[in-house]
Every structure is written in C-alpha cells, then in structure tokens.
Length: 113
Image 1 (cartoon, one colour):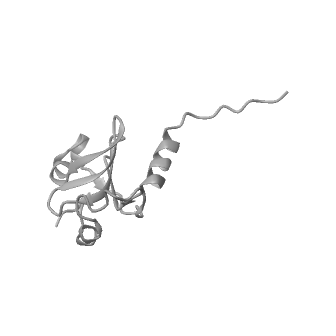
Image 2 (cartoon, one colour):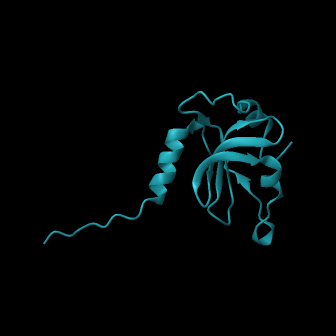
Image 3 (cartoon, one colour):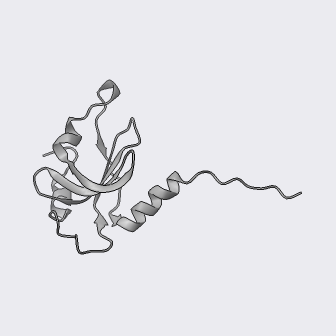
C-alpha cells in the first residue's frame, strides 16, 4: 500500500468520471510538496494510478495527475510529497474559496485623521 494512498482513502475515492455530473464534487484528499507551493486535491481515482482533481501550482486548474508520479518526485534533501493527514473532505467550491483567499493581496487599512 502507498504511503500517500491508504486503503481507507482508496475506498472513499469515487472512480474516474463518477462525479462529472455533480456541480460541486467532494475533494477527498490533499497532497502537497513541503518545499514548494504545489498542491493536488483528489476528487476521483481510477483505482490504479490516475487521479482527477484540482491542481494548485503555477495555475489553479482542474486536471489529471498520477500517484506514481507523486510518489517519484523528490525535493531538497530527499523530501517527498506528503498527504495532508488532517485534511477533511470538503466541497470543491469551499476548497477553491480557501485557496483564493490565501492568494488575495493583503488589504491596506486606511487611517482616518
């Protein structure tokens, strides 16, 4: 079994295309690189290697990514991609809102005189 994909998570992930008719599918898992800002949010899984979900990297976009590729990536000092063990499944819209809030430029507070 993969360190990134537990048996319980594997059972919980819908098969590829199972949620394509849903307007707000549930994100089931979050994977991230501890050395960069790249993050992958899994919504579906083909049962073997391919996920479909939200990818937050150079752009924020929906797409496919592979378990084998996530497992093969190494960062500085041999760091590996990790699964956020504290992530709770959430609607895609909520995940997007959270990401976009994090990208918002800081607000300047005007001082009244």
